[in-house]
Length: 491
Ligand code: NAP
Image 1 (cartoon, rainbow, N blue to C red):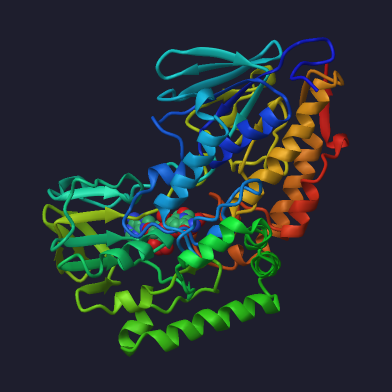
Image 2: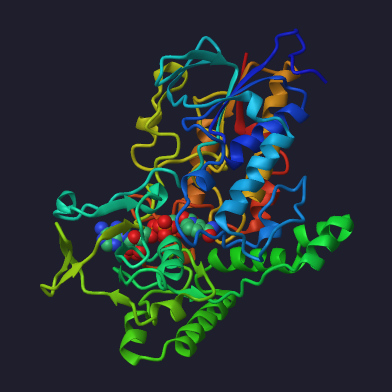
């Protein structure tokens, strides 16, 4: 089949973002015989999250063999949980192998995307204009750093940066380092810097539940076996134990009162009880909310490293930042040379601040004023032929976003096919289907563990979990084939 419609019109695609999701979308569109594809990327390299995040200790907490696309398994992973630079290398290698780089226009940040006369018209910051039949927004979720609004932050005279904008020019060895935040990122940074900094002060606002996970190395013999035995490698990639755990986990999070959540709670509590000696420190590290309410942290040695003599866990609230350090509410000044802000991301932004205007002048900013939403996380009414990968209300949790993205791209490709086959020229979810989905989703989301009473980036501005509230199987089922009755097909 060609990339043209039945009437011979060649279909043109713009993909926004050359990270995991954008690379995937390009590969899959080409496989479906579409050849007019361009990827706009605001940075000068591919890689998305794995390009932006280079902090010491960066590790993917999804097992390496499960953190790949389904199509080319990778025998070379060094560890059970892969270091960030290896993950970046994996995506760069795939982009090379599938010649995705040829499609990318680097240093081109899309600023505007307006639908008119059946096409999307795009502008970039540097003044490039383009138009396309389809836009695939592969900007994903965690890419806009969230900077803390702490009094005096601009007065600090040492080096200060967000964890996703690490300044590798700044020396760390023998330095006094302050670290604000103890999410997945902060925990990994503690582990990497505990033995390097002369003093590492981690400022914790809310304690975290930590699931202990071993992170063994693959031996050369194992890697040789993966290279020579495709069946073995395929089994590693489709690890049944891991997939069973993912399903158990998604069943658990969708019901805050499930026995699986109770089991997770028992594991993380046992980890805390067994790993921390000092009773006072143990209490500081003990969360007061349910396990998995915030994204569960899987990590081997955080409790060990936080007990290192050169590491201090500071739980007194931050009063202000001063020229030489961080002053806490008890009046103490914690002097630091380097201040790292591991304060997370603005998870409600997605493609914004792009100016996106759909059919009839409908503005994305207006329809997302209350909360970002999208039918099954991929389509929005009045934004025809614009689809999102890992968009709002998709499954996010402690599992691979790659698998999610593959299912979404396969689903989106089927919608695009409606147009290729000449059944319509524009396709987007109906307002009615969108509304029914959102009402059901919000009701279910309130009963998930994410809504059980803690603060996290999963919550929208009204405190409702913004993610897919049902099981993994329900998501996989929803992505199998679009229910065309839910879609308005125009033209
Ligand atoms: P995060 O989970 O949102 O954590 C942000 C941390 O900063 C929290 O500890 C938060 O405290 C603290 N914080 C924010 N503003 C603050 C302020 N004004 N004063 C004091 N503390 C403040 O961010 P993250 O650790 O970067 O992780 C974000 C997500 O990225 C993860 O949940 C995960 O999905 C992804 N990630 C994944 C991996 C992986 O291995 N796959 C690794 C890193 C990150 P509160 O808890 O009190 O709000």
